[in-house]
Image (cartoon, rainbow, N blue to C red; front, side, top):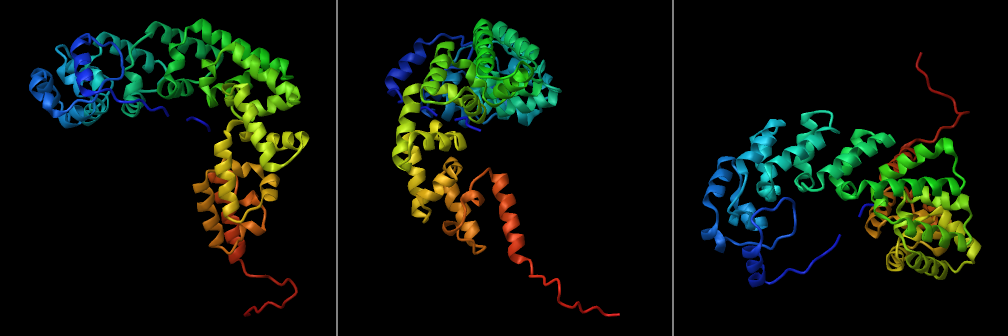
Length: 385
């Protein structure tokens, strides 16, 4: 799976403090706020602090992470705690949620209750809802565009996505629910058309689409123009419709998140690194679509890591899927195989590549074979009568 971080520079404390003083009292949803220290404790809302203490919340954590909420004149500590308790959260769960997401106490209780109804509509039970809120409090307390969220939930249900998948989207890909529903519908239509134009069958289209969305919901954040541009570029590179469909399925839709320029750079790097003709390179890419996804520097790092372990370029060309592994994973797996006396540089890389589950299965087979005594079928058996 390919899910994948941004960094921001921190504003100066003086500017941050001015922004906090000028900020509106009511904050209906999450946003980024500056760091706050204990020096501001004398300006904290003591009623808020006392109510948080009442629910066994560690105030020091809040001061360290999101101290600005303690400066707010209007907060809803009791109201938010009551909503959480109504869905089954115990005292410990309430405290944990408020410590991890202090912004919750400045959210409008009515909006939070509406959010609860939305999330409850795709959860099997209150216990499951509480668990999701504990794990992803920031997503739950992002209480905005709730009517749009509701329409998108209904749309995804009508498409055939299971509620367990939709609830996962709410926690890990919440941005797609804030898309206007017309935008999501248009993207679904474009994906369906692209699948059929690439030779996919009408009978298999729904299964293909639901699998694609389940693996990569962020595909809905793309634009129709970007999808068309990527498909046309791959066709210009000599890939057939069937091959493009293969790449799209193997890359779980991440192919549409790549621009032609980045794909071209990856192709040029791979061609130079493997010293191969266009046709040979195409076969390598079909074996390992990650050659399109990863940038030149990442591929360079992984190739160099393999070479340092004594693995040749020829071996990598035979099993390019090994490039899907980070250098750290490669080193770990080689050490495990070496412990059994298996010299990876003298063998095939198939035992090195694959998912964690696949590697452990292969390792187990090698281990069992190593410890199995040789059996001579014609040797007499010593059997006591």
